[in-house]
Image 1 (cartoon, rainbow, N blue to C red):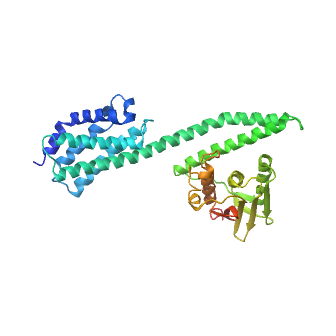
Image 2: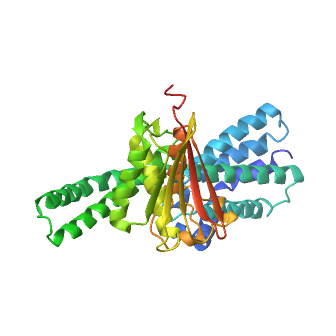
Image 3: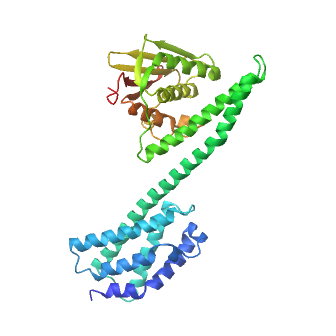
Length: 368
């Protein structure tokens, strides 16, 4: 009696695969693009594993259960990995394949005799485990594919972009002052620099997602000079809206390049989302051990719900949906700040505008 279900499953494995494939072709949209679903996935391996689990139903010791789980996990991950390689497969379709499989297995096995409670529990538990493992591997594989695509794309974009940038810079050097083309070339260069910054943001986000840290090279930096340089560059594109308020002689050990990115990103955001034509104030202050940079703009406040996702990558608030970008800027601002052992917070209220406040140690522990 104990092996009846396993025997029936073994004898009917080919039929189960055939019935499953027929239903999958009819009900899983992505499957219509593949010649043989059975040959291209791990279903034969999975059914063999399920036969073993049913055969060993009496010997369900912790060691036996653990061994079955390891093998089931391996097979589920194989299926999830394969499905992630097809551009037309989604997570919901992957899970639906298992729902169809469960229905087909019960349909076939119970044609001769009903399954008992233990047999049903083993089949249901096995399929649930397979679904979880396949879905987890599907997500991980898809993420790896996306990361590889993103890194490859951004690297490939850098080549032609650098050619355009060098050509524009050369044009600016050769055009005489007062020529009407100077302004056009300068605006082109500014747009190229913004595009280059977006590409760098994608590369850095990819590094962070794969567990790598940003490459930070610390040096002594005059932050007042750095802020003034950023404001001068941004004023060319956005007009004389920027106001700098600064204590005297503010110096810190930081990555000049990365902190510049932080200032530019926050200042440009203030232009995008602040009230049009109002001042944007950059305030630098210091204590004996700490430096704070506050970038403030007037305008509608950021809701508390929106504040909760501001620093998440690829997440954008409703007000940001109308603006260009990939939702990486504030995520990288936070990452760069934390790489400098600093903190960032936002204050936003009706009638008071919005302030992003960066706090940095004058000398990070890794430099001291």
